[in-house]
Image (cartoon, rainbow, N blue to C red):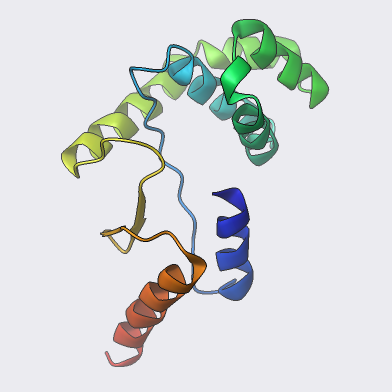
Length: 140
């Protein structure tokens, strides 16, 4: 989804804000650890780089792979380890999970534009939905 996100953000740099909410699936044993690791990387300004590496390696995710990615991105490993275990990050992720459940999220990725679920994830469809939302703000 990242190439699609980049495309949308390039087309609408002043009108679209991308917000990532975590929804680690229970069926994926490394999902919660990966989400915590991504948030720990965010604390060092490397969320997107870490996020990309996680998805590149999703079939082989393990504690060792997560550590390898962190080292590859030159993260402060002591801070990274500490942040992965922080209550603050766990609270954010569990809040995201609750929010997702409240709005009916069942899988990832699930996309919303102004609170409306996006069913067709093509660039053309997303652009059309954004244009409709932007038109609403111009008529107010």
